[in-house]
Amino acid sequence: MKTAEELIREEILTLTPYIPGKHIKAVEAELGISDIIKLASNENPLGPSPKAIEAAALALRHCNLYPDSHCGELRRALAAHLQVAEDNLVFGNGAHELIFLVTATFLNPGEEAVIPEPTFGEYAAAVKLAGGRVKSVPLQDFRIDLEACLAAITERTKLVFICNPNNPTGTTLDAQALTDFMDKVPKHVLVVLDEAYHEYAAGEDHLDGLDWVRQGRNVVVLRTFSKVYGLAGLRIGYATAKSELANYLGRVRQVFNVADVAQAAAIASIADLDYLATAVAVNQQGRDYLYRSFEAMELDYVPSQANFILVNIRGDSTKVFQELLRLGVIVRPANIFGLNNYLRVSIGTQEQNIKFVQALSSVLNM
Figure 1 (cartoon, one colour):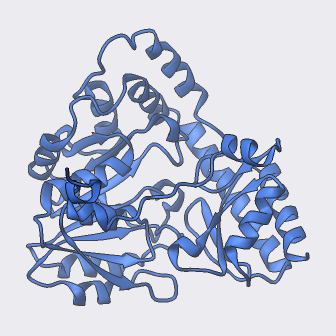
Figure 2: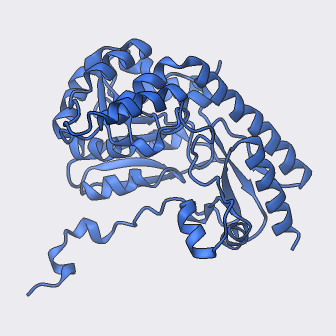
Figure 3: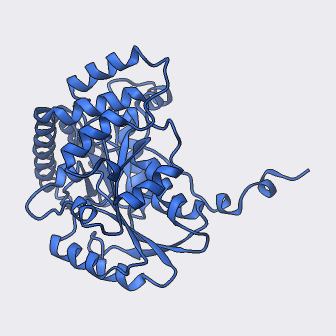
């Protein structure tokens, strides 16, 4: 009889499992403490829009029925909101699922994907699972080096992953540099532009990747309702691409991958513009407070256009992470990104931000 290793696909043996931020309940059980705050997974600390909660509760009354596989009502609402065609949209169980749909749809075994690193680790996992090869391009000064990405492209390259703002650094790309990059990408390459944090970064120098979709470029733009809309627990994201590409992604998608509860909450979230404005404002205020606090502690940090900040704690991030856990604060040690002296902290409510700063100051002064 064959062993498990002999039965499994070779690609699986090289995968590194994704390790999410610790859950509050897990820390409560592990350490026997309460009043824990979680600033590890770039979640919206405000919770969902009240209108989204109400819509989700109503949708629960019909959860005995399978969801609308086409996401028809959500499709119409989102297409109007984004000013794209309805057939440009593909919905997923979070943008996370859509990353794997992209590689499953477009990447042949042995083909290459260019990935700036450090970045979201699931790009590489999805490429490897599809039998592809990862070509890593190091960041420069915590920013994606677009010229180096172009130089890494070969005849075997099929995909380039660009996270803007980038996770874990929170940095964005210069608008003109990104435009020049898109103009130079060879026609045989598909650009996957991950804009999970787009709403936090939207400003005068932040490009909207959907413009390239409207132009019919070979680009897939990924966005999510998990971040600024506060629906991480409902798992709903979407890809936007020209209709030909979206059609093929739709063929790979599981038929009932987005629950009706999630669809209903997403529709209500899109319509609640006041909630969106509040979430962005709270994030900006928290970001400014954390900047001032880090400067007061003489800690270097990476200026961020997302809802998290990478901060240099000048020590072992794993050790500091563990000490913060004991004080009821969950953050993300950046050693998983190869940044051993850094923590990535999500921006919380002002009360949460203050608790984090006090806890960090206490740990660093031990």
